[in-house]
Image: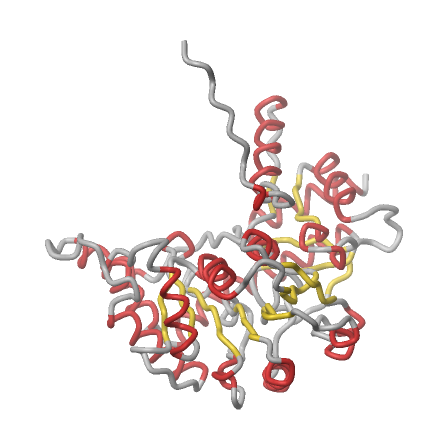
Length: 394
């Protein structure tokens, strides 16, 4: 028998653990299998609603063509690039050259890694929101960058405090990651915020990377950082069909920005993957052409779920801000709870068989918060509410 080969993993994985939800949901599945308990999981933001029927029909129709099963362009087919450019002009008032300023992605999560791998050298610093999407920190670390967190909290309205960021020092900072509507806090943006971000980036020679997948969910005023004066010289924006078009599994996103940066990212991207399946691109064109009626219908469902989510949070004794955007509700732990978000999540699951996301997974500023998803039927949220009332208040 041959001797087993022992290979150490790359040091670039040091400090980057398994994605929290991957580990925790596996643990919960083991608990369910061992005990027979059925735990309600109000965790990930994976949309449970289907895309518009016309989008599915377009996919099916295009997939019947014999000429669409080959490799596609690394930079995306013109049909999709133009659809994204038209979408940006229609909804955000931003004009883009679809030939040079739009790069389709296999989901915007891919784009975060592409940007970091394209522009960061070992030791370059990146301003990362705290709390923030865990993939931000993972992408920075895996590409050899160094995180420099900036705090988002209720004292600063969950917005960047530029004076505080400057006081921490900006030597070696190359990129600032920003995300509005914000996940996990649900804070919405304003034109003034985006203007300040562009001014900040220009002043300090920092690339602003705005992640904008939530602008059409529970938000009546979609806005893009690219609408700010001078944004193309300072900023790039990631966008996605995962949330606002209920197409998370389809993996369709985009980066928009000036030609120089798009071409540089393409140099990296073209060595990592190929273009997406043409029928998916054609169907995405149909999705991007949907009108206000689609978003009104989608948000009517999410707002109904939001109301039930408030009842659940009231039963938990949590405090929350109304008017949050996106797929979640961000809420403070009860004043009388002696512990952090992980302890609170564990306690609720043990007593009520309901799993809530501990805010601490998003950074130290989230340690006294929890997050619930609205990506589940209203009836499931109601069932969770009843479990909490029975488990915590008996």
